[in-house]
Amino acid sequence: MIKVIGVRFNSSLKVYDFKPGRHKVDIDDYVVVETAQGIEIGHVVYIDKEASSKSTDEPYKEIIRVADDKDLSRWEKMKEEGYQYLAVFREKITDLGLEMKPITVELSFEGDKAIFYFTAENRVDFRELIKTLSRNVKKQVVMRQIGPRDEAKMLGGFGTCGQQVCCNRFLMSAGSVSMDMAREQYETNVNANKVTGLCGRLMCCLAFEENQKKTTEKGQK
Image (cartoon, rainbow, N blue to C red; front, top):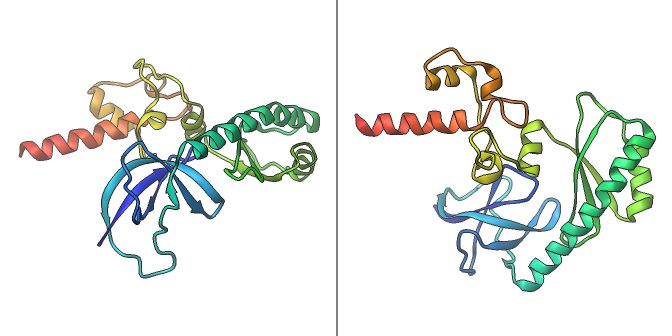
């Protein structure tokens, strides 16, 4: 067994495990790591998790370093530049008449790649869009389609409870949610509209509260 830390990136609900190596890492630190997408900065959401040593394809990577002020300053600069490209993204989608909704734009930490996030009901041919965006941003362009839950996580917002949506605030993953969970928790007939989140899907907190209920019941036995 080895000790790993959990790192979450802006665009993902998923948490990725890394080895801290010789670095002292605490929860809520930001760390610089190497990923399949290149060098990125991520937010540490847990530490000292015991994990089995991987003997197969990809071993756990070690973080490069805990992000310092210079890293964080560059990261903020890249985020601000990415936001500026969102207007261009919207404009070009309209010009080409594509049926897709622009969500956000992120730049890689090194600034050489621009990732354009969007949602769409159907498959979209965006080959011409990539060419147009590449000419405008002068960077490698990556198009990434996401689902409604990912959109809510990235953009944030407040649920009917008045709290920031769970996926943006603390959830580590988007689990399976069903109306059966709502019926059991509310113990009455449930209007689907009342348990639908900002994303248009059943609220993630139904699954979270279901797990908490099972944990409590197990502890009482």
